[in-house]
Image (cartoon, rainbow, N blue to C red; front, side, top):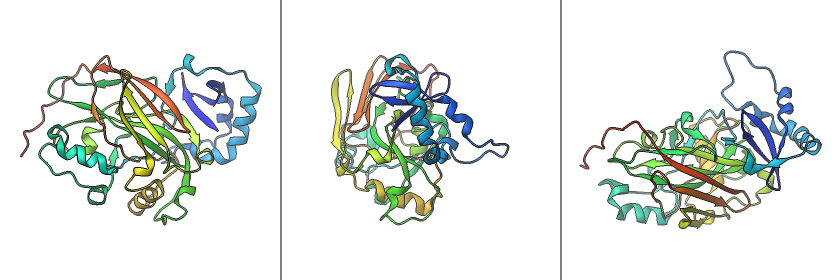
Length: 296
């Protein structure tokens, strides 16, 4: 099943490029009061609600997905986790490009571990990315995103995939500079997730998916998730060794080689095999940012 959040927080089931409104199913979610839960209620209830969502989709006529505004399909994760330099070829290009490494030797994910991105950086496929064009280079990074479906902690790699509710395309937008990753990757709309969530049962092997991103029609990144240093199961296990994972938590699994700058007016088109594709506009951010400190 594929489901999306669209327009004014409508819930839709996606079938053959059409969105079927199943928002009525949300009435079956448990009522909540302060303090609010730390997880996404829809993702937590998905196993129970899936049949109702499918049945509701059968009863309504769909509208073209191109006619709706696609929002981030997982609005309430407790955290967004990033996996740095998780492809060997990306490490090589980072060490060759001073605007990426900023005077540092780039190592592998084994050295850095993972990092957290602000929840306020989340956006959907129909929401443009805003970039600062003076003194700062902003790069595209296409990634497979895994959405946790069940609370877990300290899980072994074997069997870790059972804790995943589904997958989506992710764009881990990045401003280059010497600051910590969590700062440079957490600007508003710098964590694009979409165009919808594909439930895990439809993805037999997340470690064997072709991915690609074009900018203005030119291919910039093209790889397969089989090239991940930490595969998806290992990432879930690794993250759960440090953090308790909750339904709705998003793990961006890392980007392959070919990262590069975008500017206002550019159009990014990302796709991942068995998931789908999304087109994201780039616009200019009006507010300036501090200039980066010089490399040591």
